[in-house]
Length: 284
Image 1 (cartoon, rainbow, N blue to C red):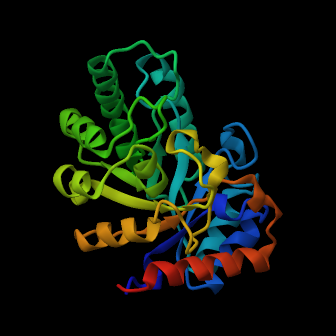
Image 2 (image 1 turned 60 degrees about the vertical axis):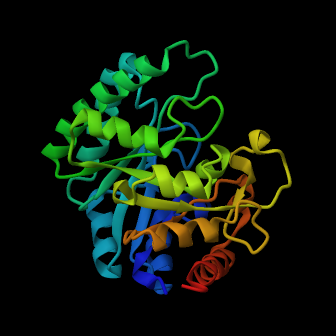
């Protein structure tokens, strides 16, 4: 059974709960890890990562509740060379505001654009160059990076093996990947693909959510993502079990996205988290 200490709450699972209440909420459930976001309240805005609380107050909340910050989501357009200066500026801002909070990782997401005219080789070359630059800055703060392939059709880095190749070619030792069950499903990463092409040693974090809508794969979007459910068409629990069976020993974070969750109060959030944990722990 996956121990409770290996679960993590992404703030998208409790978007209506302020940070000062989220930290003790997860601690009361036995969860020791949270993911912060720069887009919880709309467009990405780094000033909202800590809910405008001073870092000293956040540190006290974390220490009092024995909770750690696993990631900040996210630096976007991570594989666009023309965005490198803007991205490095944003990354440094994140690192500075959390330098006293023992932040572990920052998530990097690729470009999403139907108008991207770069070849696959150009995209990879730019991703490699950018990751090398991100890596140097991250090392100054003793923080690591996590690339999250996005399975959307307009994503420029959709598959986990593409992320593995970028890390290898960049030659960096402080980057891994996010394995997101929603994006595995969108990219149609099959069990055969997983066993033959995915090296679990590259996985630094697993994101879990469920989809209940019976839509065509290519028509799904973030609004279809909920907490785990027995009727999940993606069977995220089975994907998690496959990753665990392959030797993964890291954290499992709940990352739904639907705006419906903004209506959930603390009691509902706790119920959803507890049920999700039980589903993952079954049969392991």
